[in-house]
Image (cartoon, rainbow, N blue to C red; front, side):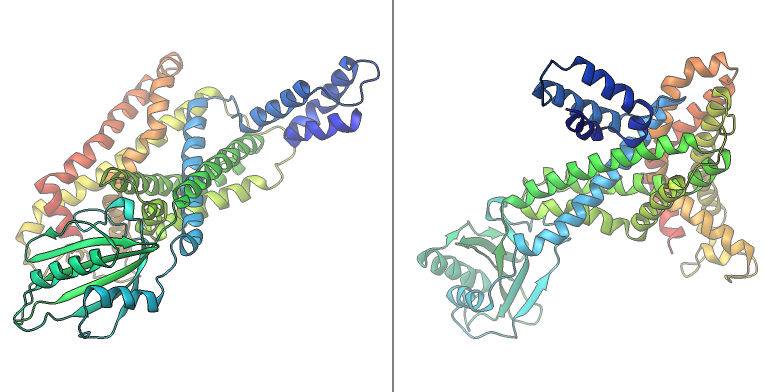
Length: 470
């Protein structure tokens, strides 16, 4: 019995077993029936569920809602990264490239005349297919394709050739969809077995009407389920990581907390931007023409759009975890009262929101004062005193302003995941602790996070962004 219970108690974290493990083991053994050799299934299940709850539980310290927002943000980012990694690794197996011989046979069936050029292979899995050119979702085309180019026979237009290809493929047993006429284009999709074909033609600019036949492989249906499971597993792993880092955070002294916060702050900021990109990709591909296996790569496409920022976010969270994994300083941690925690939290978030708003106002002010008077060849870098040089401190101010402005309309709304819990739960605490001014300042600063995307989408915002990006 003792060995069985010791094994089941490993469901609890090490720190919990160190503090209460002996007491729990003694209680379980005392409650066992005479002659019992193994735990009852109900007791074993209770221990396992209790260990899982303990591992996922967040520290109940001041600003618990901020802990909750932090854990949700980290878990969502890790889930997005896990879904992206598994999706990219599994995609070549789920959607193999088409066989060259079978693809050429399909193309010859559609267009039984000579090629106008060599076949070309393409594979861009992160260019998610949505919009008017997207294939019908039930066809499930992969991303890899082989394209063949033709020129219609003399006296035949591209629309005639496309219609003949539609008839020939249907006669050969292909499941063909209706021809889609477009603006100087015409085309249709078809499928047979594990092949998907796209035939299209369009008006040429040199007296010819080019034709194209693209042959795809077919993606497996299990791709979506696999990425979904990976996202859930990544979310759970990220939550466990967040709970562990929060517990370690409160065991460190003030110096350790400050160092970890310096790493985790940019990580959370960039993670919020990546999650917004992921939400955009997921909603667009999910709501546009239904869902297809290729849309399962939305997480990878979002991280690809975020570019180096995604790596910066992951590096910040990893470095913060490494800092917190170091042994805590002996003795009690530096005293930080609840009032000081709330003061730091309120004013820190207020400063972050106002920094983005100030950057937007500065750029728009520069545009109104100088941008409209500069010639088209000039840009904002021409306003830097002493020229654009790494040793020029004004150049670094320009770089910081550019980062705050270009990412502010996304990053500031992302910070609401922390500001809103502070505002909702901290109203009574702030008023009781004499922090009403800090609470009101954060409320006004949070409103700028809602105003920035709207202001950026106006004509003035578009003009200022175009001028600043020049």
